[in-house]
Length: 249
Image 1 (cartoon, rainbow, N blue to C red):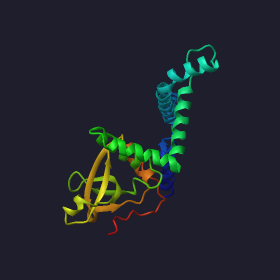
Image 2: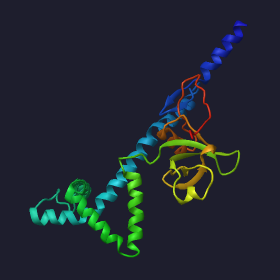
Image 3: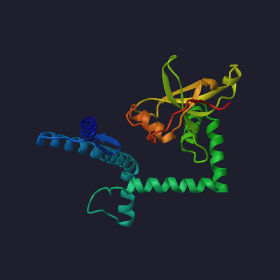
Image 4: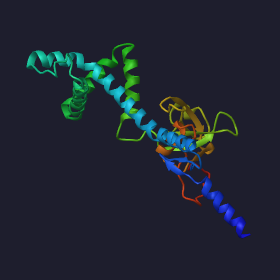
């Protein structure tokens, strides 16, 4: 009996591993080659998020910097004699200029006269055929995703989609109102269903409130779950129970 317990303990020690970046890395046993292979995959777990994050930031920097840099540098060089080690263009000057211009625009738009100017410009654009539709759509999308006054996604939810017995994770945005709700008898809610691994695209679904379940996780945890394709699961304390609760009516 004692030998059996000892065997189970030894087996537990063998399969027990460490976590790197939230992923469990099995402990390596025996053999120089296996250790090297274990070190290699552990290194990948550490470096891939760092390298990809740095690469994305660098590409965004180059794209934004390239918008104004060709125009700003000649102005600084010709007017003020500013140069950068003899280069024809100063790296980063376009990014800095564009950032300052956005900040200045925001500061102006927040005061009384700035709001008057913005409202006046909106009224002019709204009277131009075709352009008013494009401008209005872009403005509404920008306000929805960039507004700091309210959250776009209220909470993550679970519902049956695309057929009965199969569940999808979505984000509750608001109770459905207007013509859509008027055309239906049941109380509906608006849900954004993101795609994997790119959650910025997805579908707008109108789902009966009685068919939607609240999830005990944050919006960030739900996004990680979607982006990772179900690999990154929210951490829970041992013994916690998940209770399926329908949305409050």
